[in-house]
Image (tube, rainbow, N blue to C red; front, side, top):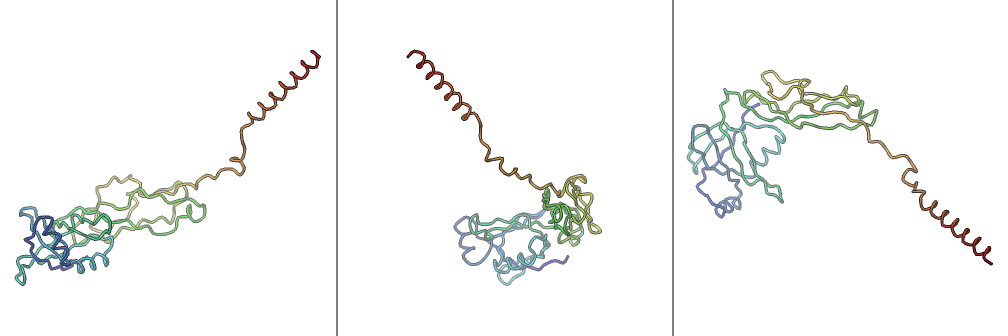
Length: 227
């Protein structure tokens, strides 16, 4: 992995109304958090940032931020995204939090899991692949963060599972997740209802009708004997 350079502008605007103005100008407000420093408020070009996100969709990206005040370069740092906030309706990005990192110190980060292969239990026996995990938290140096981790399901029959201990992690990458945790499982197909079972109805009404008919017949016999 390589650092992606991103220039950002120092931001003095605070408060909901002034932040809305920042967004209308085509920027995304952001905050840079460091371990031993006060948070730094910045704004970044929305189009540039979204282009990077689309190109690295689902990946953990390491950014090298150059912080400017106008044309004056104030500082630079390596960061990863701590959190993104999106509009609840349009889903457009409206705020970003960055964490400052050291390229020489390990960090914990979540990496997406990507299924590879065709499970015989699904392809031949009509089972279904059930996901229990969609990502895995790994520990490594920032430049060793994998783009994704493959999950090989090519040998799974119905009832078989892939566990965390079955995953092949790149060199220099480890995890503290439970090694016996299930990543995915092939489950049996749904049982279909037997044809005609739903059409069968209760027999009680017919029995009641017969009893009612017998009762009427008895009354007719009584009337005949009275006559």
